[in-house]
Length: 319
Picture: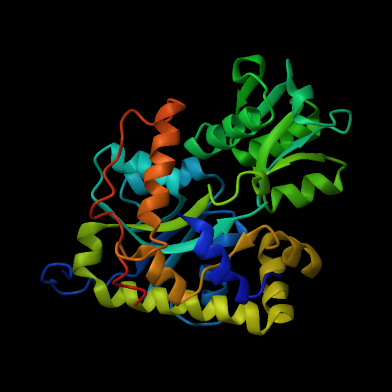
């Protein structure tokens, strides 16, 4: 468990007015969609602790980022939890959205696991790797291969959702998988070998919450209520870790120890750090890192064009 005292340090190295008049707030719950990922657990913990009601927020958990993105595109959810690179893809496609909360920063939470006979990244040459057909999966794999001087074209890709990758690994259908918790812990129990983690690419993977600009404009109170509940849950994780990880472990099918360990590779920025990350004038503004990320994604062919960061980030709902 990483204490919040680390957050300011991490945020410092993380990345070198007001919305228009609002119409009446919707009487329907805010629909929030996530895939399975420890960094999104504050939302579910807030629900279990009754920091918001079912009339305020309805949580929808999907099995993969691909499914979550599809639901957001189809207007089945109002808010979506994504990695920053996935958000840039939606923006590239013309969606009018706002990044309003930074959920976590990955420091080892994203990994490449291999069959026990594969000892390092170099031995992936000629091997089949299960990876989700999303910007994040391709980005992690591309950067890992680049860092370890392995040619991307020398790896045989199997495009699978993260839950499909878990079964493919168990069946021996793939030699390695790009994955994350809780799938990481389950596969490690079955003897998987970790040959790469996001610790080798610090500050490059950020999870955020994204909302349609129109929804945010019409429902500012609901946005603020949800953000407040989120940070109350983050505080609970730090103040009552035993109780928090019992609840989280129950949800994810992990023991208390495994649930705790699944957060070792993450930093959850608090509300003050969030406000700085989302403010354009801050020295640690996410805009700077997002522009760098956009440049890398374009260079790897994962984005078609550079994305302008102007107007994408708002700190209104976390200040």
